[in-house]
Amino acid sequence: MGVRHGRHGPAAARHFTGPPAASPGIVGRMRSVVAALCLALCGCDSVHALFAPRARRAPASPGVAMGPWLLGPAAGEMTVAWTTAEPVKGRVWYLEDRLAQEDTARTDHRVTLRSLPLDAVVRYRIEASPPVAGTFRTAPTPHSPFRVLVYGDNRTNNGDHALVARAAAAEGAQLALHTGDMVVNAADNELWARWFSEEADLLLRTPFVPTLGNHEITDNGVSYARWFQPPSRPAYHSLDYGPVHLVVLDSFEMAAGADPHSGAVSDAQLAWVEEDLRGVPAEKHVWMLVHQGPFAHPAHMRPGRGGSERVRLAVQAAARRHSIEAVFAGHEHFYERGEVDGLRYFVIGGGGAPLEDPDPTFPTVEAAHKALSFVTVDVCGCHVTGKAKDIAGRVLDSFTLSSCKEPCGAPLAAKGGAP
Image 1 (cartoon, rainbow, N blue to C red):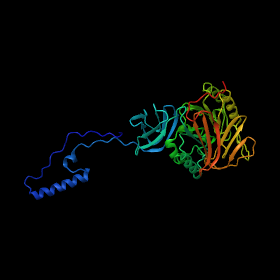
Image 2: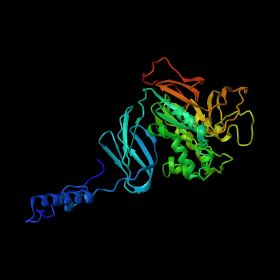
Image 3: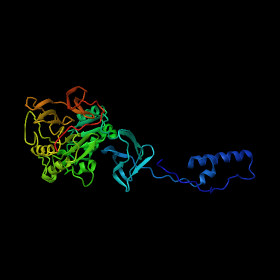
Image 4: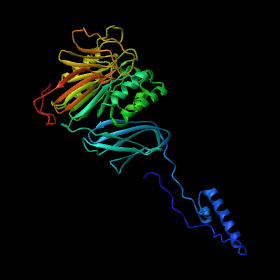
């Protein structure tokens, strides 16, 4: 599959029989000379092959310059993204004999694979030179078990980021949530190339859902939109993944006046959050992913740090429609888990940026660690448990977000919630 070859036309060369009066020894030597000439000119062994029409090969597909990475995990769908140095129509083979392809040639590619079975391992292959192949697990059923990775604040601090990326990839998660701040300067293409290189093993096989960090708007969000955001959609959105409904907030919404040093959330986003949760079934696990969360307690408070009041308003708006199981955030470069008025929140910012000191003595803080770290969350029906780990695999914290009497894998029962 891929490269096609043209057909050979009728032979165009005349038979070479040698000088009629030559002796057998001379004829043999001449044939040897002709054979050598043919071999040198075309790698063939006869005059017929030398003058026969040559098959035309289709031009080879350019190589993958960056990626691939997986976006838009949904029931029955996955999008494969990558870049090439030269424009080409992206083509992806999957489920052995299915082909998904782009209509126009481009260098930034996004090809959506459709009609995927639930909770299945799918192999895909990008047509390129050389081809690039990977596998991923499709979205789960409402009661099949799966693991989610949550991490963030890499800031292209390559040595430490590489350690976190390697340890996180080894956890075998089926979905990766990123709390933002992937690079320190979003306008620097070299930093993005280094970030994608560090994350290559994880991104090849794990669907990736990020939220916009303040460092992603150092170029007005252009690169973030290019790599991760579908056209004409704001940075805030939601998706369903098995029994989880994930709300992705934008705590540095430029339309509301945010800049890299000061967050903002528009009234339109607050209204959207409440409306988004209006029809979510009560039994769903509702999580929120945001860069600057509603609460955070660094040991040394300074402007722009701590929780965001506007994000707290967004969480309150969401809670009017549905119970919120957890809020996952970053921005502060440490790990913190706490609970305020029944809301469980996390600060997961140990992804490689220079570490900061948390304040473990604050009354609402239940766990706090200054460490390069990440979180894994295991979901199985109504059971949700998790662990925070450092890069050596040491468990820093364990927690339970949801449990019930039904065994793991049983159909979800309504948990109740706000109307």
